[in-house]
Image (cartoon, rainbow, N blue to C red):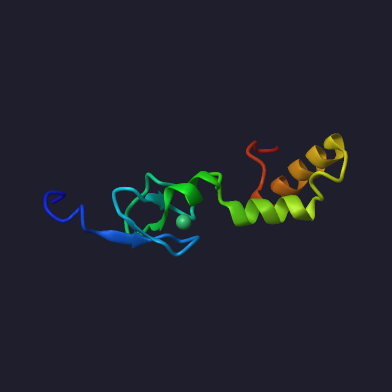
Length: 97
Ligand SMILES: [Zn+2]
C-alpha cells in the first residue's frame, strides 16, 4: 500500500500553507495522542513549523499559562496556582476520601 504513490503525494502544512511531500511532513495531532489512530485524520506540518511547536495540546496550555500570568508571578506563586487550576479543571489524580 505504500508502494507506488508516496513520492507524489503532497499535504498542506497546517501552519504556513506550504505544500510538502507527505514523506517529509510531520503528522500533527491536535489531541496530542499519536497512538490512537482510529477514526482520526491527522493534520500536517512541514518540518520547520513542526520544529517550532511543542508536542502538547498547545492552545489550552498557552491559555492556561497566560491566565496564570506565567513569567510575571513569582515561580512559587505560579506553580501553586497552576496546580490549583489544573486540579480544579481536570480533577485530582488521587482520590480523596
Ligand atoms: Zn509550515
